[in-house]
Length: 327
Image (cartoon, rainbow, N blue to C red; front, side):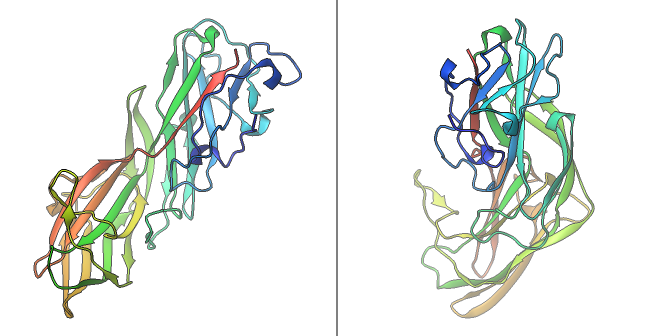
């Protein structure tokens, strides 16, 4: 069995195993152990490349025995961690968190990982969509075990707390060659303090208070713009391959009806003729907020008149980890 190191958990798919007696430390199982191991090295989250190890919290809801007690990969032997307290019959709640700072920072983690402060790097977006330089934070849904003494399989689904924003450029089918020369997303609040409003087995709802500081994410590299294509449903697709200009991770925040609205500036050429445009995101229907755990995609259709479309999609690549309490 592999030992879980503190820099792999969020970047791997962790699958369940049953730990036999041969996997246990030299001292025999006394009912205290949690066993977790990596099974296949499947990346589940491109943004996390150097994640701090998963911190797992176990709470016995009736007696609160394990409240605030973190799983420690460093203290594990062959992937097995001794909790120091035997499991008893009763209801237990499991959840965990992991994070990656990149060039940003994660600080002031409290309430067993259900509150934290994040600050993203300012000014430099990700041209390839990896967002590896940005800070990210993952919290799992809670998992309830009705009878802790049975020590069953526990599965924790990790979900994102920060928001992902993507900027795509496309041109109408058959239009002359179109080239983006520069673009900027302006007045982005890049830090904030999070606290969980609702945390259960089905959802996580965050409160986020963004900081006052703002930044502009801009790129000045020429890109030949692809045409709109047909999606699998026969409708026009506004996110064809090669349409991504840049992306970034940021904090949950409103972009509609605010004092200083988020804006986009773009300079481009159609058939060699230069154009420029600027518009506010409060004009985009259906996208009033950049929400925790979602990707907001903006498609900018470049013609003599610029059109801006926005969509909010699920961000499901947080991965999961499974482990079993040693039987």
